[in-house]
Length: 223
Image 1 (cartoon, rainbow, N blue to C red):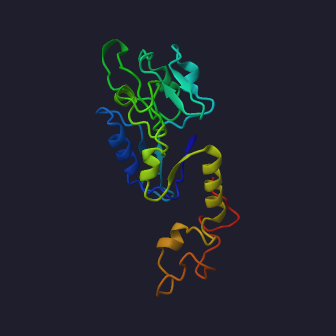
Image 2 (cartoon, one colour):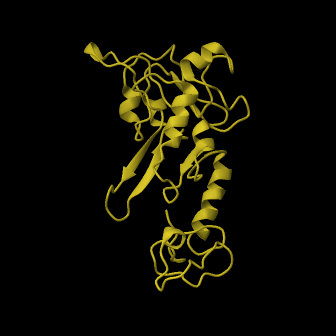
Image 3 (cartoon, rainbow, N blue to C red):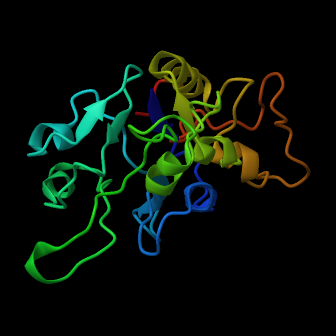
């Protein structure tokens, strides 16, 4: 189970952040998901929704001295707050800044670690009250997708089986900007050079397409 955020679709609305906060009722100061803007205010600006990426070879799992972090059968990275000692090793090991600590103070007192659970709860019984108080709602046990992915209005953030979402993203990349399914920004929102209405409607060939534009060049597959 993985997340993918399509930076060509993310509009920095923070709907995913709000959905996560509301769904799990996390404490003040703890944001399991956040939106990061890259190249803010200059050409090439992009936004990306960040949280725990549920790594296959998770560095946080490798450095935890009490082994409170573990993988589920679906590959989701979860942790046990009962075992966590708040040492912060996972915080420094994670390249995505996913682990959150609700408290700071003297003698490295950080409190129990909190992070994105892929809406899969924790080691307590599924959908139990104890699980909700510690980890939030277990949507996976209810047969649902993570709240952040369901809330995303542009479907920039998608989550689920790694093979399925990789195929979705691959299709987007291969067709973006010059196929009938998806638009590039210049085609969807740009003004016609000679006035009139935009001819590109997402169906059939596009007469106003700039093939050498950075988002419309069929020889350039976006990473």
